[in-house]
Image: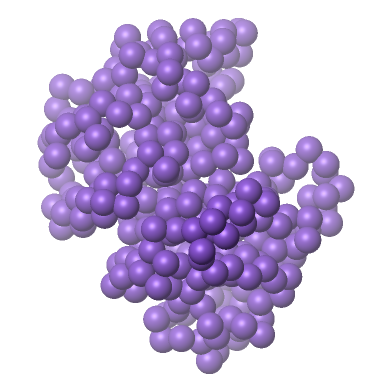
Length: 302
């Protein structure tokens, strides 16, 4: 993977995914390794982020690297009208690797084509979020002791949710049964269903999941994302479609875990936090180890 950008989870084969997860496991056991001494990493966030940006910066710090960059487009030259191409070509001169989040789909791929250093996609619009997917896979494997043959429930905004799209593509390697739970307006896009049909993988679509929750190994809750809607009426209509409560988890499988990419708004009641099924805060911690693995792999340090 040396010097190869990570733009889509499809850039990694099944073997490369497994290798990255194994590497993340090593970093969790020994999180302070100064592999990035003398290296500079640029974090360019054209869109607000807390967990992704801070976990990248934590990963870089634990590896002994230096961070430059900005946390919003308002604190960059984009505010003056600079193009994405000019920003990326300029920043390439200052660093060894670029981590970029941008609101436009396809922007990360474009950045990787004009940059002279590798680019890691930290989320581009409703398209992909491959490093979130890697930490999701790591969390699933840690809690289930396998990635194979699981019954995965994806709940919420399946139309615009980039974390859902990336996780779906990654889990197709592992004979997953998919359950898509969403309002009619936010159903999983048709192209993903066609892909699953081509792969001969099972999937079902639901509007309500309270009666079938006992079948789940993993429930992946997502936020209805206001920032993805061009029609605010559509957002207002769907924003409170689902709330997972602790009493809904009675009678579920012993191995069931609840994941969420965070931030949550109303999708998970706080009474779930202390249940044995909640895993979303540890899931966020896992992002540090997986991002350490991705960065060190791309730079050829591991």
